[in-house]
Structures are given as structure tokens and as C-alpha cells.
Image 1 (cartoon, rainbow, N blue to C red):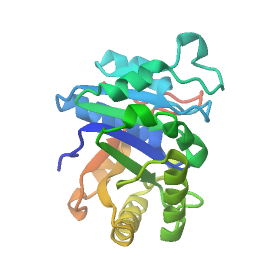
Image 2: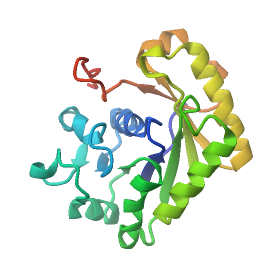
Image 3: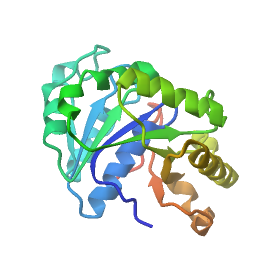
Image 4: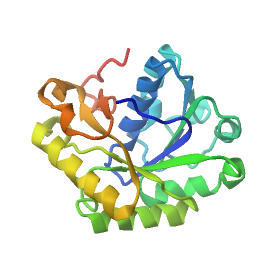
Amino acid sequence: MEIDLQGIVVIVGNYGSGKTEVSINLAVNKKRAGVDVKIADLDLVNPYFRTREARSQLSEIGIGVALPPEEYLQADLPILSPVVAGLIKNPVELTIIDAGGDDAGATVLATLADAFNGKSVHMLQVVNPLRPFTGTVKGCLKMRNEIETASKMTINGIIGNSNLIDETRPEDIYSGYEFVKLLSQESGLALKFITVPSNLMTEIDVSRFSCPVLQIKRQLVPPWKKAVKLS
């Protein structure tokens, strides 16, 4: 199944949900399908795991990346380039906004109200049920409410990203899918897709899922590890 997304897609979630990995790999997936894609890095809170870390690979395959000015790329400062607002006002076929984690990271979205005004937006919450605070439906709904309040926007879909990084097993993917399927039913939010690490794809029976699957090639890795090549 193809991931059916176009227009402006805002990716939100709690710290450790994997929203940045999802944003990067979704951009690559759609670019390979022939879609014109741009991605904006709005993570002004976490100075470590950001979309900007993969900017070279993304640029190499023709994905535009909107970032703060070069001299501020590694700064832990609330800098928001006007390019990002311009990208929202004039989106391409698929414009992905990688927001910061939790309600603190989502606050910056509220400052872009004028840019978002009148635009149709897919705001998707990445859920990793193996992380603290989102291991229950109640926890996920609380996180949803906090992000919506801070951003002054409405979440209208979820993404299942069940993983324990290098320790992820096929059973984690299956149980995570059952969890986000239940969350979808309880919340009324559409389950847009789930993710599977690229190294587990041969061990996973995708016929067990009633939604699309996005293969994840990890980019945000510790300094002693190499990111998986995107191209």
C-alpha cells in the first residue's frame, strides 16, 4: 500500500518518539515515488537529533531542506528562518514540517499561525508505545492534548513507530501495530502508516497490517555509528 499524503504534513510527537527519523524517511519514500518534496526543520529544542543532520543526503537526492542560517545550524537557540514561513505559504507537492518534541517543541508552530492560515494541514502524531508516557492510550491522548494546546493546531492522524532502536524485534513491530490500531479506534484518528526498520523488513509479514508500511533507514545515530545510506 502507498502512503497517501500530499500538501503540508506536520510531524509531531513526544521526545524519543522517532518523529525526525519518520520525517526524513517519509521524505525519501515520496521522492522516490516521483513526488516533489521539501522538508523544514523546526526542532528548536533538541540540539542533537534533528533533520539537519541528514541534510547532505537529502539534498543529494533532490529534497529541499529549509534550515536556519548556516552559522546557527549547531546553535541551541530559538532561531526560525523566514524561509520556513515562506515554504508553508507556498508549499510544494509534499511539504514536511519536522516540529520539536512534546508541547515545548510544538509551541513554535503557534508562531506560524499566519503562514498556516487558510492552509489544509495533515498534523500527524508519531507514537512509539515502547517509550515512556505513550505506552497507554491515556498517555497518548494526554500527549495529543498538550501538543494541540501548545501549537494551537489539531492533530488529525497518527503514525505508529514502535521501536527500541537497535534492540527492536519483529514482535515489537506486531504488538506496536496492535496498539496504534487500538489508539486509532479510541481516538477517532486515522492510522496513516506504521514503520519498520530496514534491517527487519525480511522478517516481517506485512500482510498482517491493514495500513501502509514505511521502511526506516536510521540517520540519527551516535558518533561511533554510521547512518544508513538513503540513496
